[in-house]
Image (cartoon, rainbow, N blue to C red; front, top):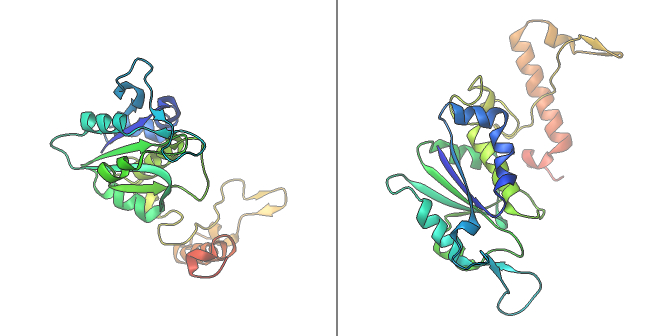
Length: 229
């Protein structure tokens, strides 16, 4: 999969996406990651990407021209592509959406990152296929959100994790949180590992994990079970 991230803060994306699993995904050729500085697509000597909003108000709005130039320059002519805008006004990001985006592993995702008071709406009207928010809060810029989305999507691609089943057995994959995990030692400061995990009885372990996952979901995310928080 090819992912192009367009931002005025390239290093915010570059650092987390060149470590650990994301680095290995690129080394394996599963991920073709390209991070672009939006200012490279300006035409004035000050490399300006923002201006005052029409109608007044506080803050600055990101101009449409650099975004259009960037997308037109980096869109692959023979590859299916989707343009995503990271914005607090977008649809909430969740595991099902990550799975949908990962399903097209032969296509290009172009992720646009907002900043300031937002992006000129003509970017949404003329370029964007999908607006996405990673949560009901506001970040300083969209680069952080783009890194989160990229990580969540790429780890679902075949060959990225050591065991491809891992990605599909995690929290949210079946609308449940994961059960607790334990490792050695079998007892630590008076806290023992549940005996069922030491039993070697795979059916009972699976039943315990399902039960504990449901308990954790009910306690921390009752909305996933259709209950009021």
